[in-house]
Image 1: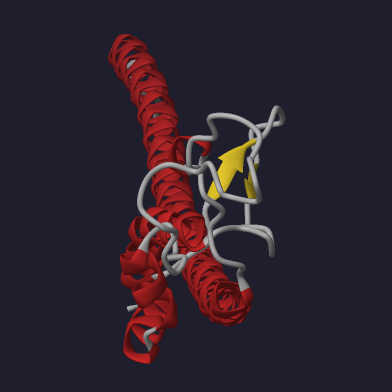
Image 2: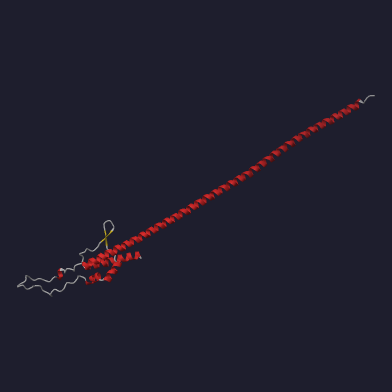
Length: 234
């Protein structure tokens, strides 16, 4: 018994060729599989990176939102505190101004009351001076003419005999001595004044030896300033 050597060799050659082809094909498939595995790993890594980036973006968005909310609340709180402080300062300033206005009004009323008291006191003194003033002396033009020394005891004065002396201004005496007029003048009169070198005004009162006409002139000059004082006091 034996075998056909040629057939066996031919079969062996065919098997070797097929094995070599399968080996090459297997190597090719393995290379492709490795490539696919590499691509899949790259895709997975990329997907992971994208997921990480998305998570980071979401976390960053949340952090930014929280920080913005905190900053907004802080700014709002500071703005409210500043507004309340400004309102409190404004109210305190208004109260201070109102207190100053009240103090000035009280000072004005006190000053006017003191001025009224002073004016009434000076008017009373002026009425007393007018009541005790001596009659006006005759002027040289009103004296009788003298022609020479008297002879035999006779008088050499020419002209009508001297009559009773009259005040220089009967109207002034009537104004000064009239009770009703005195009270009216007391309400309206303020002391006359003169300007000094320093710019201040100094009160000028009639002396006790002033004539009734001078007193009446002082009363007339004081009426205008008294009306101003009365208008300010009203």
